[in-house]
Amino acid sequence: MIVTRFAPSPTGDPHIGNIRTALFNYLFAKHSGGKFYLRIEDTDQNRHNSESVTAIKKALNWLGIVPDNIDKPVIQSERLGTYKEAAQKLVSEGKAYVCNCTKERLDKVRSNQISKKQNPRYDGHCRDLNLPYTDGCVIRMKVPSSKKIVFEDLIRGKIEVDSNVLDDQVLLKSDGFPTYHLAHVIDDYEMGTSHVFRGEEWLSSAPKHVLLFEMFDFKPPVYAHLPVILSPEKGKLSKRDGATTILAYQQMGYLPEALVNFMALLGWNPKTNDELFTLEQLVEKFSSGNINKSPAVFDINKLNNVNRHYLIKLLSSDKNRLESLIDKKSIDYLKSVNRPLGNNKSLKNVMIDLIIPRINKLDEFYNHLKIFIKQPELSKDLLVFKKSSESNTKLALSEFIKKAVTIDTNDWLWEKIEVTLADIVSENNLSNGDVFWPVRYALSGEEKSPPPQELATILGKQESLNRIKKAIELI
Image (cartoon, rainbow, N blue to C red; front, side):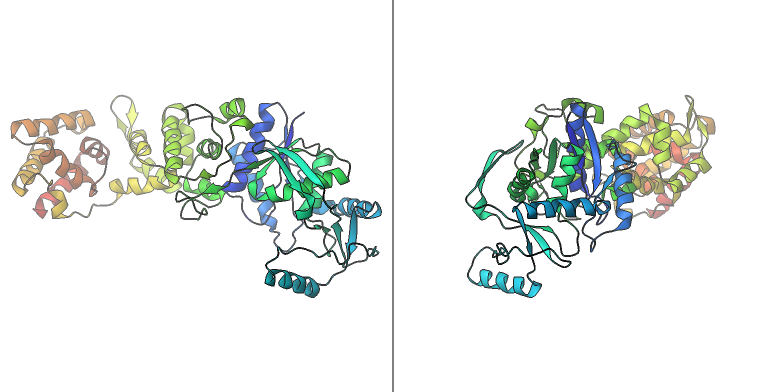
């Protein structure tokens, strides 16, 4: 059976990079009908954040990439005895050794190596001393010399490394906690992990991990080292580019299906022109052979486009869910002004239909709604269309008032208003810009906004007339 895992360190809220790793592990396992597990690697007690585990679970549940053991993940800090026993077993077999070098000595060795332009590494001082293990000591793996370590990476192919370039890695720290190198080998063996998708920053450590599996006489999992995620400028991803936590994306109003779709394309290529996939479709199509070696580029504009697609889709497929995701302040306002319109529509639904296609994420909803809540602050320069004149603008607005007052309140709907605007154009030898622009700007106070007939319908007859009259006073 295919078994993968997501093994985050609880040092903060999960972000795009490590959740992309979780997603790829999930997709690979579920594509083959396998298992996907969660393991919390909390052996770095200095950086441990107790709230991080809750955030990790919340993010995975929200995105729908739920581990099979989400309610009872493997917790490394609860397995310290297992790791210590494993490290001491290697010592007894001559595959590891006890080291009691002080920090001061190690710092001096490192400084001397750097001054000689050598790669910093442990100098093997305690390697053959056969020291007994006592509290405060560390246990290091005894890397054999001149050994060729060979393994197959699912993404990068065959990799060969000479053991002489490897350091005698610490396996058990002086505080009794294991390092990642030891703990993940023991855990992956006992969890039956068959494949490990992880970031490419671990590629340089993979040879020593393969060697450790061999030392324990365990079969190693198949490794797949994922490409790094870069900014649009091909540099390190920053907060300005989108390097924020997954739960922050939730708060900003991104949909989980959009984020999953977007993350899947950060390094994975479906080999088609399609870019929109549900989670179920991703499970069906996912193949490790389609993962790129080259870095993935995080494009916030692409994420916004994908999210807008799913928001618009909800308009027709699940408006109740969509409404539940819109912020409470906006919904409360919509309910307060709601009224029936023609064709079995309500003002609330018309406003949602109007705003959703114009936003990228739901936290932008209220900014668009403010057009209808607050009185617009108008500029005379913007009121007059760039190809029009003050006289034509005043004529258009005045004619709109004349015709608008004759429209019955029950008929005040976008179809009727659009016809009215068109009549003003034809009857007064004006252009669309002469008429539609100033009416739209007078109603919204924005250079970019919905069409005037839609704005007027939502604002209602009296409010629309009030705003047009204020605009005329400006000329």
